[in-house]
Image (tube, rainbow, N blue to C red):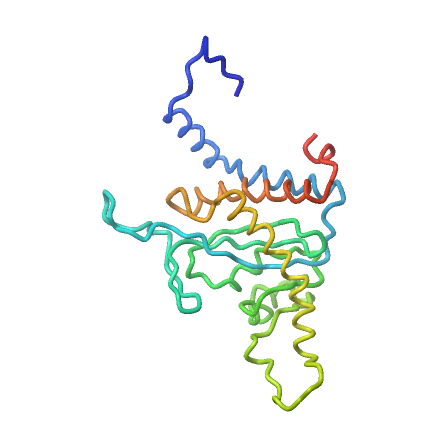
Length: 241
């Protein structure tokens, strides 16, 4: 920030808070994410033609031991497996060729993953990969009524329980081989989630409300894309210059 501590006073918490509110009001986080995506595209690092979709749960404080005695009204609980979670979901669309994140959205945790798929795929996508949570996505009105989306081939993983064979059969289970092939592509979507949650330490929401947290997530996923560029030994000059 180039502050000379000998001659200038350090900004207090209120100054920084007002500055963050300006970021949120003008959606600067979203603009930074979009700008970086355009730079990646111009540098030839987004292949287009295919996307991977997935969502991750971000925890929120479930305690009511606070001044108002209530939880965040925009956060909800959802059951995954045998465990309940309270918080929000971040939905991501990832370029199937490179693994860079091109779209993110945020919802309450109880919103089903497949309900956001029309927001995560691109008009020039020809194929979309996803987990079994997206099995019903091709039948959604938002997909069927869209001329571009209706032509997409959805390669969605089947549920493991549907891949049963006779125990006496000793040959290869072709259905499982196909599912492994889908998963080998789909696992790219886990990398940016891992970076944001583990490397950047954003496993729990910091602010109340989905909009405030999404401003932060736009910045975090933009940084995740840059980190993946560094890991791939990409020249960042045409991207950040």
